[in-house]
Image 1 (cartoon, rainbow, N blue to C red):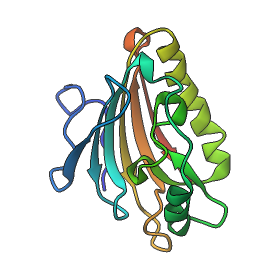
Image 2: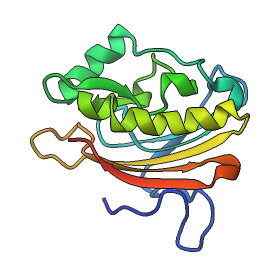
Image 3: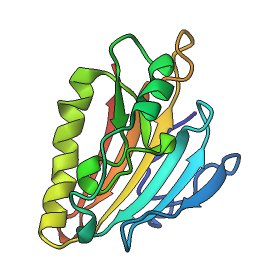
Length: 169
């Protein structure tokens, strides 16, 4: 899969549609005002592309991964991987939805990725909605259902845009 900037298409439009081969699905979320769109691909039931608008009232409204989600994620990753949220619990991310998780290196999940999630949480604390977009790559032949890399974009209200390309070691 080739990566594109997940915030803008080649013409600068916000949030381009995902690759046409992916089937899209809008998720109803219990936190009022939260809009989540997921396009499944990669591992069965796991996202290839995810977009979300997180409102300030979502702050702290998510949940930890359930035991069922942890059990479903475990065989997709390496020994010791975390069932890491895409949309963090602190940002209102549901802990009982498989599409919101992928197997993550614990150092990554509890380090660099957690720091990025805090950037969004700080915007929500300032009563600013955050728009998120993610594109995932499954690139390890030995572990074909483990995300190896992803790009994300955070549109942080008046604070600008944060774009990054991260490896899941």
